Image 1 (cartoon, rainbow, N blue to C red):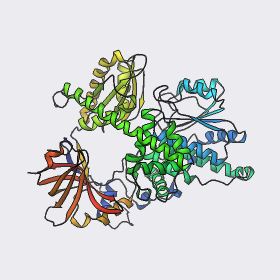
Image 2 (image 1 turned 45 degrees about the horizontal axis):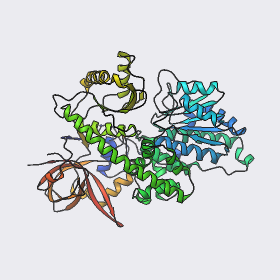
Image 3 (image 1 turned 180 degrees about the vertical axis):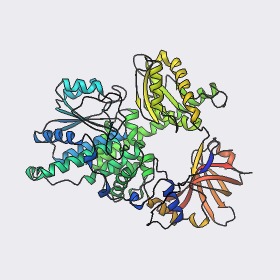
Image 4 (image 1 turned 90 degrees about the horizontal axis):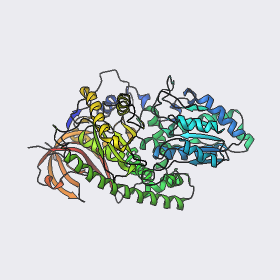
Length: 582
C-alpha cells in the first residue's frame, strides 16, 4: 500500500567524494546535503548581489544597450511584448517599472491572448503594435523563435530587441539586438536565467551605461536602485521552474528578503494575502506553489492582462481587487483541472495504461472538451502518475488541436518532437520547448498517426532510461535532528528549488494516530523507532486515505516542515512518500 497509489524506491542521494571547503558549515548533515548538490566551496553559497556576474558577459548586450540608449535620447515609443505565463508577466512588470525608473516616458505593453494569437511575437501581434504607433518592440520571455514576426516588424520600420531565455532553433530572428544566455557560443556563465532574469540584467547594464553618460543628472532624476524589482524577479524565476543555480539563488534570495521585509510591490503583497501566506515567513516554495499559480491562472483561463495590472499598479486597493480576481480564476482552474483529470484517468483505463503490459512508452491524450490553458498541468499530473512522457491535447481552431508535453528525466521532449518532424515532415504544424516541457500544434485528423509516432520515438529513447520511480533522500535523521531548530536551520541555509532540491529524509516510524483531514489529506502522530519522541506529520492528496487508518508502521520519505497556525509555529513532517511496513 502506497501513499499516492504509486510504489517508489527510496534512494539515498549520492555524495561525490571530492575535496570540499565548506569551512563555514560545521553541521555534518547540512554539509552532506550541500556536497550532494555539488557545492564544494562556501563561496558557492554567497547571497550578495555583488557576486552576480557582469551583464557585459552576455554576448548581445553591447548592441542592446546601443539601441536602448538611442531610444532614451529620442524618447521613442517602446512597446513590450510579453509571454502569457508568470515569467512573462513578471518580465513585463520589471520592464515597465524598470524603464520608467531609468527615465523612459513612452512605454506600453502587449501580451498575446493564448487563445487568439498563440505564443510570441507573431505577425498578428506586430499589427497590434503598429496600431499603437510604437517605434521599438522589446520582447521579454519570448522572441527567439519569432522569425516571421521580427521580419514583419522590421519591414514596417519597427526596431526589434529580443530578450529571451528559451533555446534557439537553427535560425535566429533578424532582430536589431538579441540578449539570450542560451545563444550559440555564449560566454555568460549560466544558461539558466528565466526571462525575468534576462530583462533584469539588461536594465542593470542600461543603468550603468546611462550613469556613465550623466543621464540621470541631465534628466534631473534620481538614479534608481533596481533592487526594488527583485521581488518580481524572484517570483518569475521560481514560477518558471528554471534551475536554481548560483546566480538564480542570489536573485531569489534577494527578492525574498525584500518580500519578507514587506518592501515589495503592492500586487505581490496582495497575492500573498489572498494565498493565505505571511510575507515575513515566505519561502521559495511558496512562490512556486501558492503565488505563481494564482498569477498563471490569468494566462491559462482568460488573459494575462489582469495579472500584469496587478504587478504594475501602485494602488494597494486595486492590487487587492486584481489579486482576488486572480484567486477566483485559480479556483476555476482547479475545478476544470479536476474534471479533466477524471476524464484522463477514464481514457487511461480504457487504454489499459495502468497495466504494465499495455502502457505506451509515450502517452497521448485528447478530449474535445478540454481547456487549452490547463492541458500543461494535466500532462504533468499524468506524467507523474505513469512516469512516462505525456502529451495532453485540446481543441483549437481551423481543425487543429494544441498539445502540451511533459517529460521525465532522460527523455528530451523537444528532441522527440524534432525526430517526429524529421520522420513525418507534414505532421507537426508548430512546436517548441525544452527538455522537460514543450508545446505543439497538429491537425485533428493527424492525431492517430502522431500518437503512434510519439510512442515509437519515445520507445527508442527509453532504452537507456531507468523507469523505476525513485525518491531521493538525504539519509535517515537521528532524533536530535528531528527538531524545530534544525528545521529552521534548513529553511535559512539556502534557497531550495529546481535542481537544488529541498532536503528530503527517510525513516521507519510507528503510527500512534492517524486521521483523515478534509477529503484526501492524512494527519499523523508518529514515533521514530526506538524513541519516545512524538512527531506530527501530514500527507496531502493521498489515494484512498481510509486504507491508512489502521496502519501501525510506515516507511516514509519526508521533509522537515514548520506548521504555522494562529501565530504558533510547530514542527511537522510533510510526507512525500510512504508505504506500509508489515
